[in-house]
Length: 473
Image 1: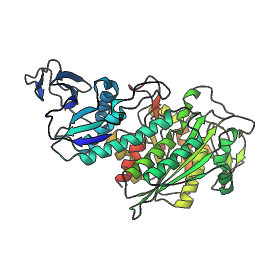
Image 2 (image 1 turned 135 degrees about the vertical axis):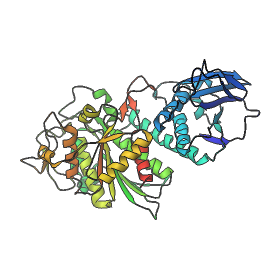
Image 3 (image 1 turned 90 degrees about the vertical axis):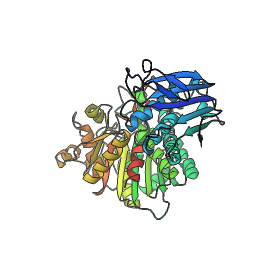
Image 4 (image 1 turned 90 degrees about the horizontal axis):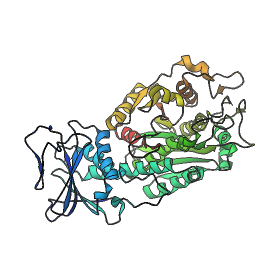
């Protein structure tokens, strides 16, 4: 999206977006702008409302902000306008930026407008959103210097749109090789290095836990390593994202909900989107990210319950349930990252357990860490933008849930309780007691229902969250 600052609306024709703070329905003072008056009886700026007036060859869109605005609500308001009122837009649109807006509010507004261009119908014939027209230029009026916030908001939305695509496209499109190619092409465009291990290289390196999960698939596993290192960096952050591009459950095959299992790589998508955004914003931090990408499928070569497999860390793993596969690929991802890159802070994101959904529903992610400072910083970063999380314990009282008699550790407790916690304890086993590691179980927040589509779809949870966390270090 191209943008241009203008001083006034003299001679402008097209659509004008006018954010309005709430007054009250009985106010005797009408809302006025650009020679257009709106009585409070029909519109007074109530949140989630808007009002259209045609005048001077312009469509005036008065957008209700309510009395109080948080980042997420503001973003949703403008996404709704862009997505559901696209018929009122042409290639000429002007945004009036309220003088009261701070940089975060400007950022949220632009992110919302850009996200409103997303169309879930990837394989349906439909008209392109006017904002995506090559000739489109968003003009804006502001008494403040908002250019940087506008540019940042657009970059955040672009990374989130890419994440939407990765999660929502079907699994016969987005397979492990697709993710590897996406990472390589994006790395060249935005400026981070990418290395990919295929099946043979992964075996030679010793990524046995990762490879075990992909044994039943015709699609070759891809162990994707990305490294953004701009030089003279402040700190080094490591990320790992679960990249199961489709999860049948393996031989412990799923009996329900399998149609949505294309979303089981949403953790990987969040990490990939974060790498694009961090590099696009040119943040002064080194970020190394790993995406272990494979399919958990079923054939004669699939790994089996009661198998004992090896791992990159050298620990043996008893397989209790082949549907507890995400933690197996993350184990090798975490071990490889920590041993070979030694980041100061490590964060993994994964659609890992139904237990996290059972605990929190679809309102927040489950956070696990033994580092109180890390927990606080992640929660503050998430709260600021509406990507919430809540901490669950990693007490050693749960350690027996992953103890095995035949191997060093087992991949599933077999119990119907505390599933998210025992999964986190399993991952902790492979962090080599790293002092600043956090696990985010995003099963309930990465893929869900909202007003922007009729079916479940991607949220891009984690992209902005992790980037904001890094910015605030």
